[in-house]
Image 1 (tube, rainbow, N blue to C red):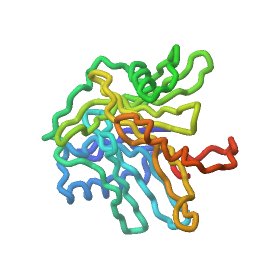
Image 2: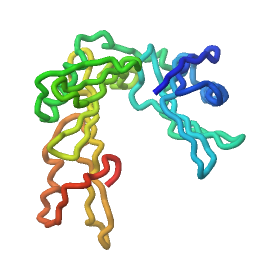
Image 3: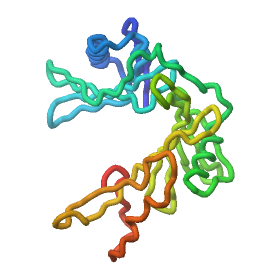
Image 4: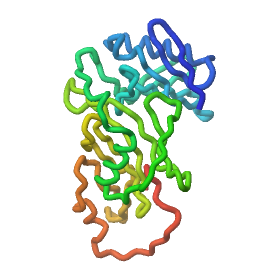
Length: 253
């Protein structure tokens, strides 16, 4: 994916692809941020991480990532939708007054490889004997592969994690797949000391146990502690016809 740095004074942003319409979109975003009371430090390093055009509605959707000191802030994504001459913002998760926050741990000793091992041990995923770590070309992002098979194991991104109010801690964000199940995990590991700050299972398990067989979902775990009691609904005495393929969609059952 081609990334370019573009200056819109005083905003330095990263845009995907060529220049074109992105400049006008960014001007709309800057106006929005200013009108909502965001300080320049809150959005001066904003990056466009993805965008899409809908042929059905004719609308463009631009997703902005909040960045501070060159590092993404975990979960801080804002979506700008532009349709003809109208624009609106949805899912605004940008944080305000970053200048008042304390940012710690970005120079910690935990490497991307260390973070992968800590995350795997926490989730009880068998350890990989050897790792190949390569720079993806994106800021603070690395790819982990198995050197024997060249299999992709995880992308590791350094992020700021809002641990408490006005307290940010640097973390490695990993995406891990458990080969023994359909589970796909997002794990945050502290750069300072390897603590597990957050785990979230992106796979939803479906049950047709609602009224008249309605569908319901339940995540295995989105807690910082891995708890086997969360699997109790998998053994409720029901019987099923089970097929190994296709697997469940990680985002929707």
